[in-house]
Image 1 (cartoon, rainbow, N blue to C red):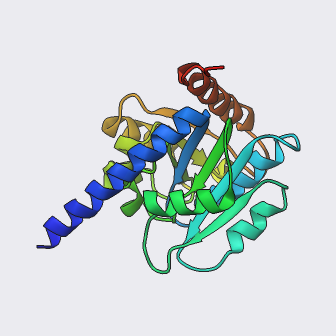
Image 2 (image 1 turned 120 degrees about the vertical axis):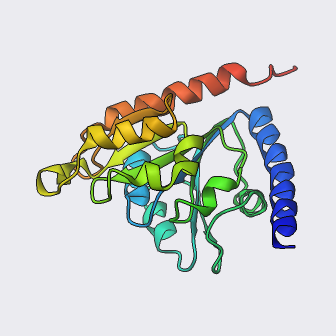
Length: 225
């Protein structure tokens, strides 16, 4: 019975995600979905990313947590539209949550939509949000074997970002081994390493994001005048 219910829930989510994907395509919105364990540095990465954009850049953020609006308040300081999604115990965002809060935010394209999922490597991997790419973060304070322990998200992610690289001199972590393990799960996964604190590797992250945004523009339907 539980399996039947789960399949029904995921089927309904996939239907709504397909509608969101079509909406993004029609409005020329690039949506990316950030997924990681708690404390891996999603919000810090978003802070530095927003801080790199000029005022007026068409970008919005949806950030999910079980409780509190702490992350949204951190991100609002950069002057872009931000909406906190409080799930109240649900360990992931789903397409219905994104649709409702996106409507309330009133964000329309063309532009960039950054979705910070609930801190969890399991539940969010199964829920399509209509995004162009899932991005999985792994911090150097975690284990190199995380991709092997949580293969679902590493299999589905387009990009793996190694975070908190400024701490590498102080922890026992092998970036090459972490990447090797990730590519055992997903041989084609993109990879970059950065520190939101020092800015090291940040140019590569912005270049990756810009390239994906350019690809989205090229694939967007032509506007009929």
